[in-house]
Length: 166
Image (tube, rainbow, N blue to C red; front, side, top):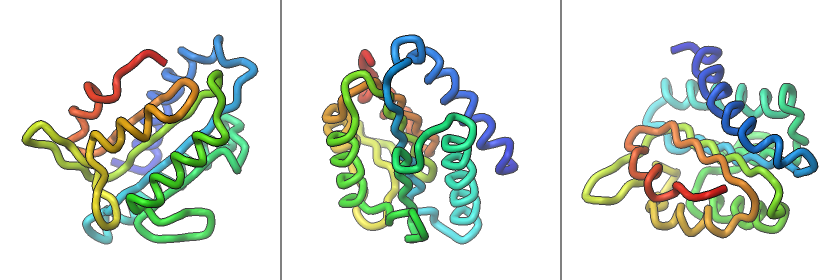
């Protein structure tokens, strides 16, 4: 799948999600956390980096997200991109907790690999992963309306665990 096609598909999903809350959020701020986790190889690393970069650019240029409202994490530190470790994910959510208000829209996009089984699911990060229970605790702590898109394999358990009003 090409970068343009993949980003286009995710953009459509996100646009539809954001449209559902747009009428209520006209005066609200918008924040995004885009995480590309451990890739498992050079081919995936390049693909995920391209998707992350294209998507964050789309948020800033097409959806007019202020640059300081878009947080990016990756398996390699780059200019403006932090390392996608368990600790940095927690730091990013702490930042969202401090900055987002109850009427704001917070978008979280996970790009990468995941695992599911035995009633648990994880998104693969650099180093130890966060469990689905960790993600639930992080998400619950953020005020505002949350749009959570997990495009990783093994993502189905996230849907049930994270589904909630707003």
